[in-house]
Image 1 (cartoon, rainbow, N blue to C red):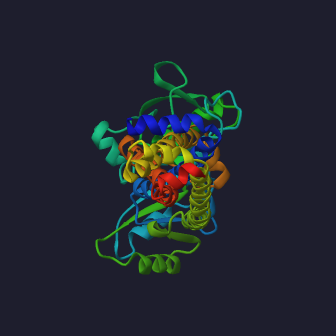
Image 2: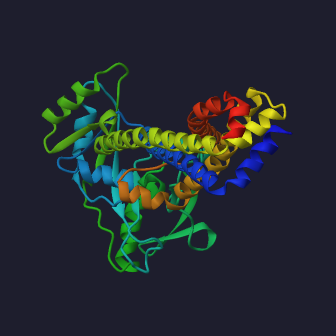
Length: 397
């Protein structure tokens, strides 16, 4: 008889045992894949967001560090200001290669003059910018004209002719940045000239005017000269420019990185408990099943089946159950991540970026193999034990 066919008949004839084994495989695969996707997606999102900014140091008003991270990570609008003269002060510090200011704004909440409620908006200086410009040079060599914007991955046009209503003014969406899994995906980018034009139009067309304090910026992004110690430069900035706080790119999103590390430790502990318990439970199930099937397998041996065939039939049965359970488990994990990723991000307070198709396929394969290995190890001892019994003795019991 075919090995897989025999294994499938045994599975069909023992539905309760099969369901329990498959459920264990499902839990192991689903939890392993879900936690891996979550942790790797969050870590990749943090790294990509830091790279997207393209700055070695971000200078914000003192006390605005947390608000800054919330804006970049979760898209929560930020409102803080510092004197524009700080741009020149920072550029004059030895070791600074380039500086560029940014102004952080937000649309109104529930206002008809804004297509999207409370959307985080970033205005940049095209003459000095090194964060948005690399993307523009590849796709829009001429840059953004007055009234043109680019959006994060989640931003889409809401009006005709690819337009978005902002403070009563219709701006044109020229494209979307690559996804980062952070608040940058739901943000709008435009030039400082467009920002001031929006403020002017809002005086007449908006429910509330857009206020940009004259001579003020929200943050200044710095690039340092190659080989420079950014930590020493950050100390120098804090010492020489009053009222500001420099954030090194390596320390950006530090609270989220700490939270992610804590989450990783929790996942490791849970997995360390789930995996051995699942193996132990499956092993006990197969050990009891082996004792129940002593006569059946004894008859099989008497009909000419070798010890190896008996052992392999039991392991094939376990592998089939593991594969079926693991396949359902990884499907549930991927579906949950895809459908509830926004809820997960908000609940855990960490960003998340879906992996590429190739990376996802690899992680699914690892999850299925881990689950199959667990079931295989659990069934190995009972299979070896029952395959070595004497068929005559087994048939009399």
